[in-house]
Amino acid sequence: MRCFKSALTLALLASASTAFAQGTITSGTANYVQTASHWDVSPEVNFTGVGTGDQLFESGWWFRVQGDTQETVFPTPTTTNYTGAVATIAWTDLAGRGLGVAKTITLTSAGAGLGEAGTTIAVTNNGAAAITLHLFNMIDLDVNGSAAGDNAVLVQPNNYIRVNDATAGQCEYRGPGAVAYQVLPFAATTDVAAQLSNTTVTDFPNTGLPFGPGDLTAGFQWTLQLAPGATGTVQLFVACNTTATPVSLQRFQVD
Image 1 (cartoon, rainbow, N blue to C red):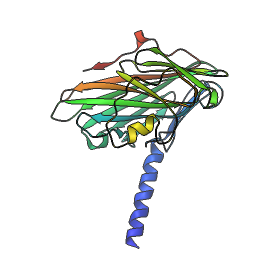
Image 2: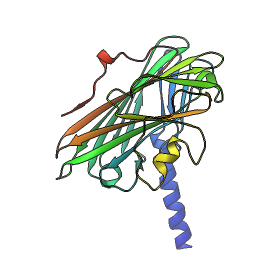
Image 3: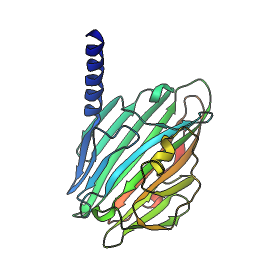
Image 4: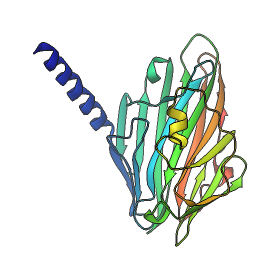
């Protein structure tokens, strides 16, 4: 009975932890939702009010410190706050690796049926040794609220992808400073999320474009050199039925 109660308590604590981490931000008619099941290798996200239906199925982050044998998904954060159009999310010690992470998602919408979610991630190396850190974002766009009819092209090597639905609607996926991308059709065991979640090292090979029509998954990879105490910052933009933030207003840096 004690074992059963302990298991039940742990399950309830885990459920409460992921529940607190979910939330919604809004701007005009646009809504961006990170669900309770977002913090795993199938990171569910909803992006609505920026076209027909839900434009996003999944979008999440993984990391690898050089020397690791595989990538690790960002787990449930230490703190979250969803207020108005801004979500602030933090990990005091990401996966026990001595990395402090501050993530901000800002939602903007200039009118009905269009909007952009901009993400900034700042990672601080709190360890005693310099590291090479690889960051990865994975996305599964369903432009116009449907999966099967998406077509994608590379607008700018290797960090700017445009996705059009065969019927109507367009989304842009942009990661300034990304060193590589990968695009693969959705399939539970072979798509981009699966590549990041297996037990081997993944480096994106700049392949998969042009794509479609089909159900697209895509990803960007950044590489940061972080001395002890240094902070590296990357940004990501997902814009639907509007142009992604121009390069002149984006930044990629290591302090």
